[in-house]
Image (cartoon, rainbow, N blue to C red):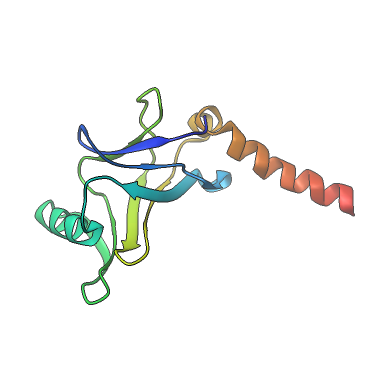
Length: 133
């Protein structure tokens, strides 16, 4: 199912994403987040991740860059409010550029149901290679 996905912290929508990037064999989807009502994504995620003891992989305050995962209450939901569940959800980005959200480890059957367009694009790249050889 393509379209707009809501990024929520518990029940509060903090942004939207298209989940435009994918790697089906890894059960991975990711996309740029359009943050809503946040002046500084870095300040928000930095404070929240420290308060909730999320795993902060990289934190560069001078550049306002953060990369964190296992953020309590963070989720991505499709238009039917179905959660996109995987083993890890990561958020990373700069205030001066953008933030991205990534979910890895989505089970294959769920991935095929939730992201048929990503599966088709992945399969078609091999068909195109075979036709050109």
